Image 1 (cartoon, rainbow, N blue to C red):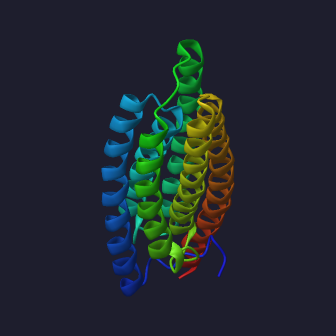
Image 2 (cartoon, one colour):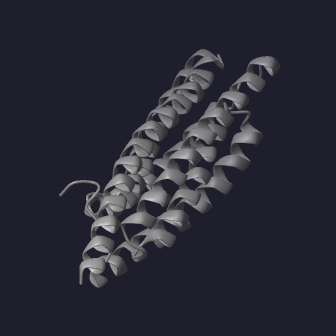
Image 3 (cartoon, rainbow, N blue to C red):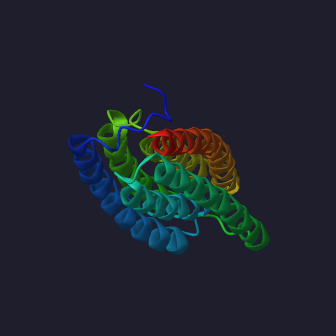
Length: 216
């Protein structure tokens, strides 16, 4: 099934999508609060960047939840909004990295590792929950991409924590923050591309439907 195929009009599919999106929305909202608070206390750019990812994903899942069952046009619009949010958070993370460079503080590696491990477990659960729904439509695919990216980011945070602990340098923390920002940008481009394709398909379908009704 292609990513622009809209299965959201089927009642049992929309119900399943809503339940999964509600769970991943709650998980990401909670992890945002945890990572932001501990990231600031531990002076970790990687954790703050990952918390921004969590907040962005929570917004993405909220938009996805709103779009479920509203048809191909709404699905495409939601994906466009999500792509824009991803791009915005990429810029935000870059700003946080710049601030960290100016201050030069070394993060607390033990806190980075502990919170990173919790975040990895939460995001792995999100990936599992969204796996079977990822090809339903562009809306669910973009939600799955967000969770997949989160798992990659969490692994990177854990690796950075290990290197910071071993070396006492804050450079790995900054490097992971930059990598997360780059991942945001790449995912934003992909989601926006899929959304534009889906939007053109929805517009063509609506035009064909209107033409058929005018003939009748």
